[in-house]
Length: 311
Image (cartoon, rainbow, N blue to C red):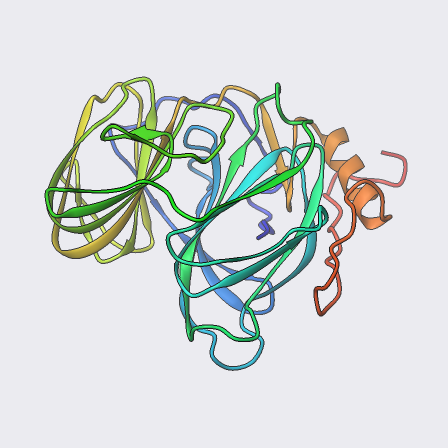
């Protein structure tokens, strides 16, 4: 999944600046691959990261029973981890390391790009009609951004029940459970599915955000509906979630990300020279391997506006 947005691409993110007690961010609609509309919540003009979470697309629900369904041709990544969480349907992942993996609801696909990897995403030929879920990126810190690429599939994550909610621990730890998903900065990821009132203990050194994937509710007294993200800065030890009817929420958190980031398309670097090098290498067929088996063409990296032939 890619970023093509002139208001965001090529802009740098530093440590978060002061924010209101609760910040509301409205999603922007974008198009993924061959025509699938998504709601993009991170990055935005108002907030680039929440912890190391630096990208959040909410896709679907979408009927993929006809045609090709989801089709995202081979494309590269650097300096990040992709984190796929489907709610409904199936996605087939292929990558340049040779992995081919179908992911289903309740499972996590984690791809670590490190110095560079390429992959594709598509709907399997035989698949459920409905596709719905979240695609996230995790920025790698300087200490890990050049590590060897890797792919890990987690067939299950810890799931527990509290106060009428079914809670999946996607990243980090909560309620005495720890996710097996391997990350490189302090993070939290929870899916909260249910109806009622839930009091959450928060790490005060974390910043947090919450997104409604289904239904609506109130978080820290503020209304929350689909297509919105509510951001909570560090310093809070508790938060209350209230859902008057069944809802599905995604709660993310982490220590504020202090390394500089420069994001262009599917690349994360630290400066313009990084991005120019990644763009040239991908388009000239160097350094990202080859994705085998995808029934289509690989994508071309658009050159950033500052890139010249001699950059």
